[in-house]
Image 1 (cartoon, rainbow, N blue to C red):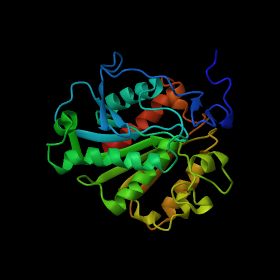
Image 2: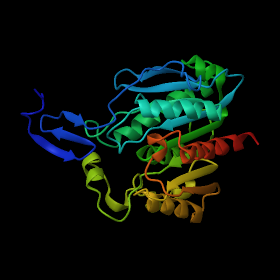
Image 3: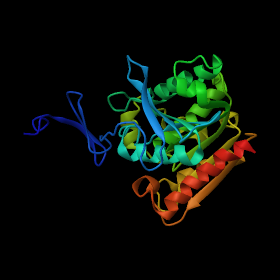
Image 4: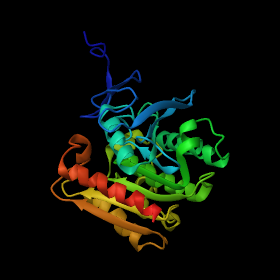
Amino acid sequence: MDPNSNKEVLREFPRLFRQYKDGTVERFMGTDTTPPGTDPLTNAQSKDVTINPQTGVAARLYLPPNPAGKLPLLIYIHGGAFCICSPFNTTYHRHLNTLTAETNAVVVSVHYRLAPEHPLPTAYDDTWEAIQWTAKHAAVHGGGPEPWLNDHADFSRVFLAGDSAGANLAHNMAMRGAVEGFGGFTLDGVVLIHPYFGNDQRDELTEFLYPSYGGLTDPKIHPEKDPNLSGLGCRRVLVLVAEKDFLRERGRSYYETVKGSAWSGTVEMVETEGEGHVFHLMNPSAEKSVDLVKQIVSFIKQSQC
């Protein structure tokens, strides 16, 4: 018998989740997990670390095959509308194994708490805590708690990346870092894959997940309304959009707004024709998915020039 069959539903968002009046949440996708280890396809290594035992903020760390010397550091933030998925999902684990091997980078894949149990801005604060934890390894010059970061991360080549809601989080972390500082490293670049930002229409999901949402001028959701956008805390931004993605125009608008602002960095946009939202996660071996990864690899390797 379904344990939820007699519960009264508070709110349901199809394909995402159902929340009951007793506070419990039933998610419809993004709940599968896979353990860390050595990936047989890429030979990338991974392991899980706990950052905050009280809240459960954590990360899955990745090392490329045969890591030698200091390598770029990529902090990755998963998507899922702020309410589903985790770094431990099979889909994200597979994607991060590939990114790790292809970029030859150390990767920190952030595990933040999900709404609606933990309403926004919890995800922003959790992600910032994970970044601060990572930065400690730069600030203490190899004396941080995680040997993989001490031994292999080059804190002069640090990148943020995320897809969908994770891209929103990545942008906001770059903004927060510009104000508060990254505590030991300078952010080189940000990669936003099919980013979720708001438009000029009401969004019921955002309103439900973010009780303190400031409406159509809230800078976390609507960066084009942020008067401080020109202070974006990195040198470069890569925006990846897809022709058939329902968020395509929002990504393009973000690109145009950043490009037209007083920010002194460089922003570029690449559009994939004929594909939808996060297509690269659904079919990673397809030619266009491989090309998307190559765009990210090229962006990160430019830091070595």
